[in-house]
Length: 399
Image (cartoon, rainbow, N blue to C red; front, side):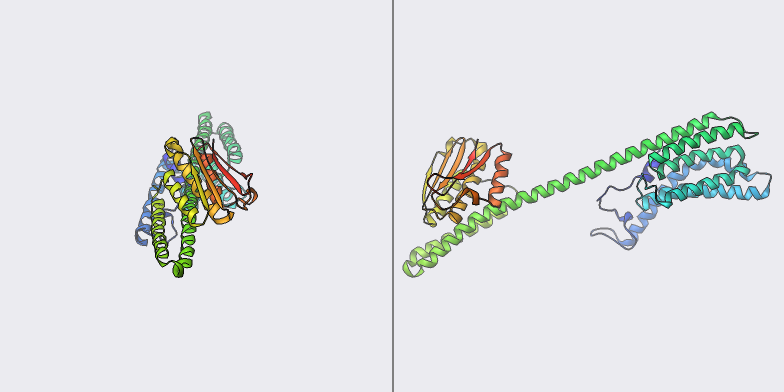
């Protein structure tokens, strides 16, 4: 059973081939030299041949009977047929591994049917010389049938095989009835079917693990791109506003322009640090820092900021979400609203950002808000965007 399982197990879909699975002359980064891969491939093939061939020891008595047949012509033909049958039996398993033939092969493939047809012809050629002992070859024929054909074809053929063996032992003159061999053929076919099912389940599990891994990688990429967008979007917006302000103040108020440039430098360094910490996966926003940054951004944009609420009253598990909400909401106000005033209100249940600009809830779309909505849903909260009663729009995140 171990031989059959090892010989027939194809690699899971999408699996990176091992060095001995690669075509000759091809390697992967970090693999051993081609000569080593060829050596490994030969060793693998040798072990598969050994494990598959050891089961053929049960055909030794059949070969002896053929070799001692009274007719010299049938003696040679029968002995050669048995040896050829053994070669086909071993070759099937090596080919299944090498060409990645699926266990439930396409019945339209001539390779499967042709192999079985040739094996059957060899059994018939060995019969005149080996006599009744040739029926032992029918057990191996049942194994080949189940491996090369789908169960809907292989199962009936195995049962037909067992029936013909039973009839032959009872009808051919001089042969002894052997119902036990027919039963062994049926049990062998059932066992091979079970191995096929096991291999299929293992392959399905391997594919499922690969899909889960791929989805996890995709999710992590989305998370990182979302965080990077939110971080750089806010920081670069403030840097742009301060740079424009400094440009206007160079001639009017050089001292203040110099301070604005210094703040631009500090903001750029902070943004760089944020990107690095985000890439390292341990960035945590704080609501207090985001409120302070929001006031700076609004003041720089010439928007009057009104911030209310106590950070100390906010549950710890909600601080990061509220921090992201303040960052995204204020960034949108600075970028798009054209507002004169902005209100930021926080309480233990929600955070709300409202402006009196020209924005509209219908135009409030973008990657930032999409990412914020995903964060809110992950925390069991809800993102609400609506038009404010005094113009502009209102964004609320909470429960």
